[in-house]
Length: 171
Length: 132
Image 1 (cartoon, rainbow over the protein chains, first blue to last red):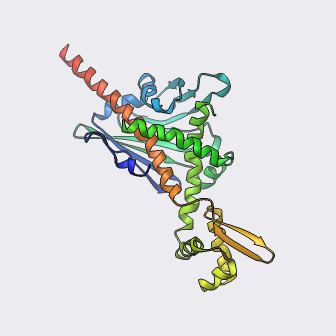
Image 2 (tube, rainbow over the protein chains, first blue to last red):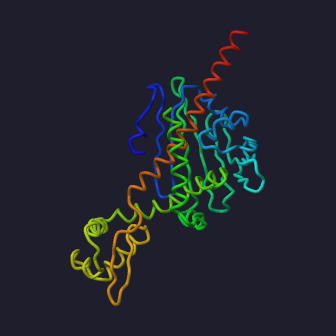
Image 3 (cartoon, rainbow over the protein chains, first blue to last red):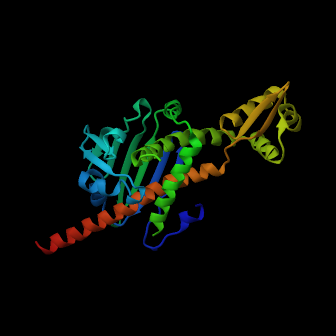
């Protein structure tokens, strides 16, 4: 798995980087060959957003996707078609500045949810996208992890899942 | 076998959970003595007393260092009689890099799909221009 991260099939493809900038923060960066307004559109219009947020290789269906991408608006994503196993992710847009910035809360986990900030920086027709996750405190993150028992099995399943994702990335 | 939605949920929880473990691991290995202890335990199990002697410190001081490593899951200890033996824990530092790579793969995979969408938007705009 370690060597695959450097493998890129086409030279034009941009690299995704992830970085832990502190014990409470995670940053993801990626450049797109398009003006910021287009990338922004793909993040804020539900009919576009739902087509890329869940990569096909994950084998998960997005049952519904409601995004009211305005400052003060809310969003709600429901995964799975079977009511008994559906999983919801929801929160509020704290700031939506067209073509440059989106900030939202992640409320499904209660108090411990991160604040996600996405910025769109246009330069020479390309857009640098930066996603920044900030957890309220180390303690909040600790609490959020409490319900995870049986880790080895979970990790194994996660590995299987991501091998599929990785294969999808290389193909 | 978990339902796909549950796997998705686990993936998200994993990101949170792993952050916590990573915090502990990074803190644990930020200290030269603790790195030395890990290296030592990589060769053989040792008691707190052995480690304290080898690293020229008090038993109380060594107990604190081992406590930090234990919390990060890098070391486990077992008390037999009056001796507490330390050994390498179930987790290895490789997991830390593997985790961030998993997280990166998820985003990379999303972004490949996003590339297709913006290409489509570009083509649509060019077509619209022509029709004006």
